[in-house]
Length: 162
Image (cartoon, rainbow, N blue to C red; front, side):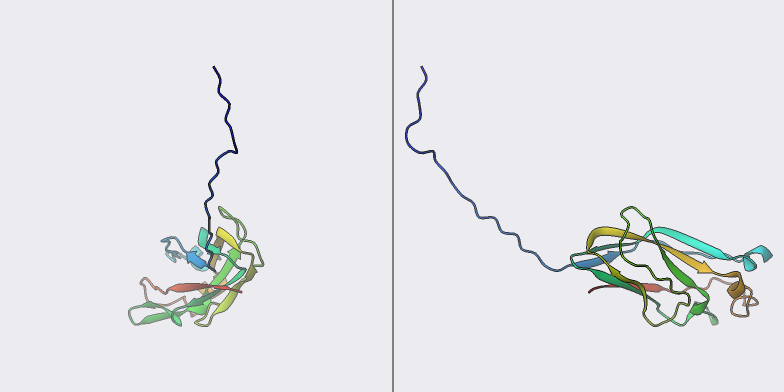
């Protein structure tokens, strides 16, 4: 026997809220970029170190990225090489390519310089970076003739919502 339901169907409701906040975050992989000058050819050739997905940004608003060195020199003990020997170039590509305009920073300095003037919002969008030291810089007195050693400096990237 089949019994029919009588009356109106039963209903219930639930209120669902979404609380949104403006967010911007940036990650860089634990990457170390190394230039090696261990023979004559190294001093006479442009050197480029490419880092895929060097930066990963999540932003709920359009954003820009700036870059700077944390000090005026690469340092090895008391020996110094000016940071202006290095060029930083944002490159298209990566796992989830970042949109927007890219600008090369031909002379790294301790001042913030614009790398990405404006990129659209996105979640975990990536940017590849080329680090370049030209042969003309390597063969100049800035590098050539410096004492042997490992010269180190930190580069800082800053993402800001626009």
